[in-house]
Length: 451
Image (tube, rainbow, N blue to C red; front, side, top):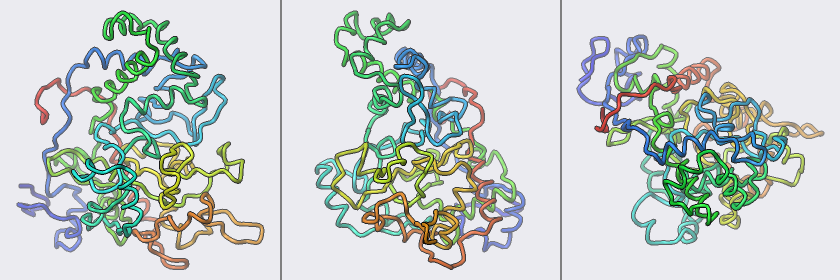
């Protein structure tokens, strides 16, 4: 039971009912959660020896062609395990002059990321192949996502899960292999070269202790074990999933939100306004785990082409997400071209590059995109020499039908009133800032998952 301004709450109060309640104004002013919950937080335990090795490797710059790049170089702990720089991509390669093609995502809150699939998350997916699921998904109608009703999308045959912007890795261990060998990132050249660097590293004796004295006789096995250790570090270390934001405290009735943050929260959930919660789920799971602010699904949003990317200097080069160029197994399934993974919004206010191509550098720009993409595209996209607005200019014309035009607020049309006013966009940004975790302070070591 919770109380807010004299209102006794004995059952969950759906957010959409708050504004209709006679005490709605007081709820907004006081900023209390009228229905606090007990969150089931991840346990905090001492790191295993494997995870401690992974932590060492995560920060070791010697495991790169330049000798100056580590996992932490692009996934900085001080920046929510995201990029420390303000540019759209990070620089890597042998001389740290080679630009990447995509914005670096955060490594936080990935421990519950499901493997890539097409379709609902149920036992049926275990009995059919990915190709079969893809064919079913391509033939299925596209459901409309709203923050009110998740039932349709929960059963829809849609791409979901996986790591990277295109879901091409299913495990954290597989994900670590990508940057390790990428010539514009850590640039190890080959598995053999990476293994040789591991064998010369100061922690090589620890690897021999954990994996046997002959671990470096098999380069593939040595690198696989090292990357497994990094994955264990990301899974075990609480700094990757602290759930220490003010919103988490508010969910538990331990903090208040300001009036602007409360207004932003309601707008975030309102299908007639932001409808953000349709994709960035903000409710605890039925078993009490904190929300991850993503549905793990894929969307084609049609963000503008970023002229700052070196790859985009070629007018014929396009990043098509699920169907290429970095993922190759779905390149023939053209209905998925232009789709990218929906990221978590946790710690989003700490980022400097947004969307897969890093086109935007502030939350204000992101909210403007959602508000004006269809109602006033001239504010979002460049113009051709004849004055035409080049809408969806980062996709070939044949794939622009994949862009989401049905989920609010993308169901509006040219000249219509935007879903949000300027002050409402500012309120949503105020709410998004409540998702920033406090500087990590280890909780009391415990064994009980709810402690």
